[in-house]
Each structure stands twice: as C-alpha cells, then as structure tokens.
Image (cartoon, rainbow, N blue to C red):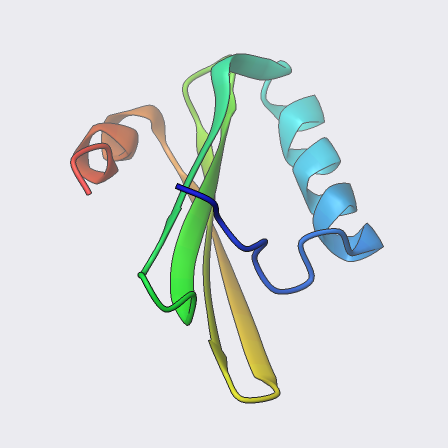
Length: 85
C-alpha cells in the first residue's frame, strides 16, 4: 500500500523533533519506523522507535487545507498496546 506523507512530513521542525528524540533515547531501533493511514488519506500515524524502547508517535489528520499533527513520547510498555492497530 502506498502512503501519503503525514502533513509537514519533510518539515525541518518534524525532522528536528525526531533527531532530538533519537539523541535522547540512544539512537534508532530496528525496525526504526512504522506508519499507517485511513484509505482516504485523511488521518493516520507514524511511529519512530528508539533503541531504549521509547516510541515517538505522530497522529496526524487533514481536512481540506487544515492539517494537524500531535506528537506523543510513549514509554516502552506503552508501545505494545499500539502495535496491534
């Protein structure tokens, strides 16, 4: 399945947030990322995984020209509850 990028996916702010997250949590894990979106490309999420088990999750949505992103840092035990989405 082809995914549209999240809103502002290539923005310097988003990249900086990911780099800061990985620097604070020991670098990237393997696999480093996952993503999903609804069939219409109106909402979805991306996750970046750190070596220490933390997850940076970005829930995003778009409606017309309005785009919104919400970031959450999840501790290792919370990641397991999101892997079945």
